[in-house]
Length: 191
Image (cartoon, rainbow, N blue to C red):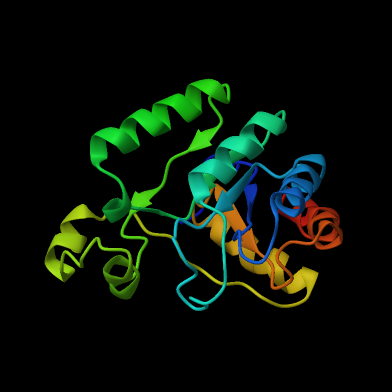
């Protein structure tokens, strides 16, 4: 069924998993995303990368806070926050503090963002599938790949179906050149 009003201009977010990058590299990519007009940057909420447990990574709330304090406009968020890693009262206080300190630029995504082995390795224990399902608040998905024209066509389809925010993950960990090219070659086709 066709929309009776124009589709909103979609927003693009950039997923920057904080793996094998120092903070300076993450900050440079976040600033490049901000300069290119991205809406937000997103981080993973893991104590170790699930697919590369031997790899080191920076802690997500610390990274999100530091990026928010150094950037001017870009919003920050996590894909998604693991319910199991923080007590709900602590998480609420952390979210409120970051949102106030950043001038309202926190995107809060809650859910089961962890892996049973990760929880066991760090002494949290696995709450079980039934409890995880009860604690799940949302999900994200959708993988799009191809030429800039193919990606723009797929994103237009999602936009026309009601999507308002696209979170971009690049295989090169969002190098500034990739961030800029995507903004120049794909995003204008969505307007």
